[in-house]
Image 1 (cartoon, one colour):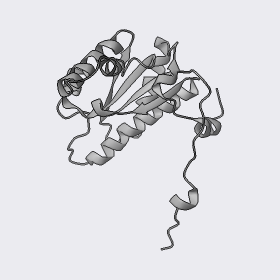
Image 2 (spheres, one colour):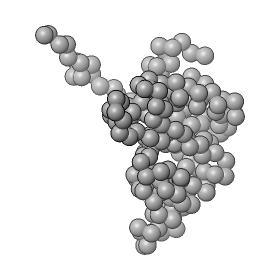
Image 3 (tube, rainbow, N blue to C red):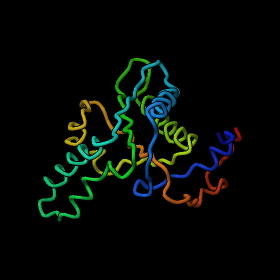
Amino acid sequence: MPDALELLTTRRSVKPMELQGPGPSASELETLLKIAARVPDHGKLAPWRFVVFEGEARRKAGEKIAAVFCADNPQATADQIEFESNRLARAPLVIAVVSRAGPHVKIPEWEQQLSSGASAMSLVFAAHAMGYAASWITEWYAYDRRVLDAFGLTSNERITGFVHIGRPAKPPEDRSRPDLAAIVSRYQG
């Protein structure tokens, strides 16, 4: 296992279409989910949950995405429909992190949403620590209520992100990162 700081500084997003199998085993998946559930959670609300897309379920989910796409795009070509059908089949494993944030007497909804984001990021880091690569994305279908309903989300739930996990087909390239001088200030009182 890589050193923790090296792990944090070497994580790279890998495009879903550049991820290949095999994906995580059942025991690795359980570890990934345990880690993703171990995030700051003011009030112990667990304002997130997970939907796992693996095996043939990835294609079945893609059929639902494609059906919504076709309803909105009746002129869609066969290639476009196929592309939409494969949205969740590009990586061996996809985990949707679902935000269940809502009104609470003590815990602001914003804090609950941040906890859900922390869960998604922990999932990405955990995959990297296991030797996999991951990509946290949303795309249009994460915001379409018809797709969310088809995936079993309730009316108050939203997608924080779809985390695609697999093995990188090639070594991931780094990208430029923000210059700290441009994003860091020091409070002077």
